[in-house]
Image (cartoon, rainbow, N blue to C red):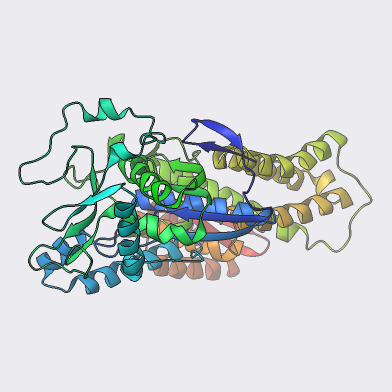
Length: 483
């Protein structure tokens, strides 16, 4: 398996630091608001990575933190007249609800910054003692960036270039414009903890250094690309200065999500929470949409793109349903599949996993999944092929592969009939089609057909078509879908 390492700017063979064991830490959310689509992408990328590593037989310890005390949380609490702890709990609960809906596995460990306050204070003290940080008269503690010569090695930035134009703001007591706070003296009305430097609370970056420390050295550290600098750069400096070991072997960062080619922003009015999206589309549709691009490529969220994702899911689940029905045949002819078709089929399973081995290329992997669908449909549509034992083996293989794909990606794992029914209901909702009225007209049409009143049956069929509903008569009875 190869993974793109932000630190080296290249793909590298992934070899766990401890044979058979992987420690992975991913920066979680600051819990002051509902999760947006960008949070969903990051969560899904690392969810698939954990699933795939475990598929390969590795023992993965997955750690994803919550920042549960922060300026934004305090500001939201003040705006709403609530306790900051209540705000944090509200949005931790909302995070779990949203991620559960998307099928994101819970992390093995979910540390909160407030649970690690003793460890954070101790880490700040170690940095001061070793000369990498200093306290100010007002009770702030700053990391001395120039005391860590490797600063900038992740983001590939020069400290001199970064300092150009940087200034110490009036009233600040830091010695260098690039120094950053690891401990902040409490302001009036803010939550605080007692420390050797007085009452205060941690800086943002030091939290992750403290919460990841029990799992060092990490095999993989991940997050969105917006965290490369300053968060992850500062985290490296703090941790490696204090602990004397490499923080992480591989750094992985997913690209941004844009809305109609624009950066998502509340000021632009295009801010999309996960809940906004799930009012219109099913959770698996969003999951498929976000995984249909390789994680280092930007994703442009559009309604048209979500519709395409929905159609793709429709195709796959219809093929799953038809494969199950095809296997209900009582007798099978001793007919093998054509050699070229069998050869192609045999190669598609390994090709799927090879795509994930190549820097978690979910886009390419899903392409192979739909090559499977095309092969299955070709067999099911060929009367000579679908009755043979070769077809039976292929259909059984398809169902087995679908289960494996579901384990690796969290896609295509629902019961086909239940999924397709739920999808149709969601599409009807968007189209303004009353399913109860459709059922009433279909029942009346069934009665007309039973009475051999085919003129009335055709009238009712046409009335359904005018509603946007297409009816198909099958040996099993009427079926319908949106036109």
